[in-house]
Image 1 (cartoon, rainbow, N blue to C red):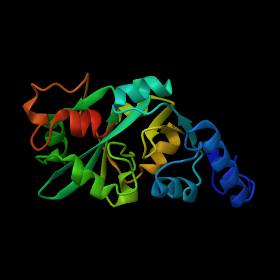
Image 2: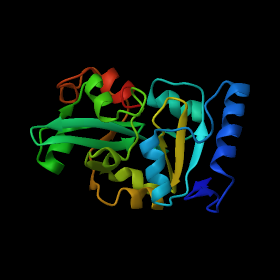
Image 3: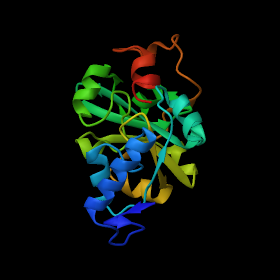
Amino acid sequence: MVRGKGWNGDAGPAAGSIRGMAEARKQREGWTNMIDMAPRLRQHLVTMEVPFAPKRHRPTSTASETAEAAHVPGAKLVKAVLVRDGQGLLLAVLASTHHIDFDLLKRALGRQLELVPEPEISDVFFDCAEGAVPAFGAVYGVPVVMDTALLGHDELFVEAGDHRHVVGLKTKDFIRLMRHARRASFAVAGPVHASEPAAEPSAPHTTSEEVGNA
């Protein structure tokens, strides 16, 4: 668990020694270190003094693969899907086991939203690997709408900005980080299907919702 200025909320070892140990471990194991994540995301969690637990897993390319590899319930793994309309960008945050019902989203927000193509997503989340979008859009200047079904769990896991780590958070801390997010019920259980026209206005399903924002 990481909090604030160092491990477990205390001062922790010197930054240089942490980097040295991390490099040694990376070379020894062939993996990134346990606290490797998108720099903006990590700085935000540290600044907000939120306890977080990075969890390493094998490289994955979809949300369902990530849940399996990280050994976390899919309903507790948060995925983030970047959408837009004439008003601008919006990050829809929901469980990895669900997909966006764009009709429900339109009724909740009064906006006709569509998926953002993957190359444009990378421009917004510039310090993240392609398809590894963290849930905290505010860190990148993007407003967020959060599906209310996420709030029924005691803990949640979010993408760390790469394809090898997720970050575990208590739901109460997740809610605090999402204090400016709008809440709505717009997610439907089950995978994205190619037959759903509402979910494919600007990009293939497997790119933007299932793979691209895994």
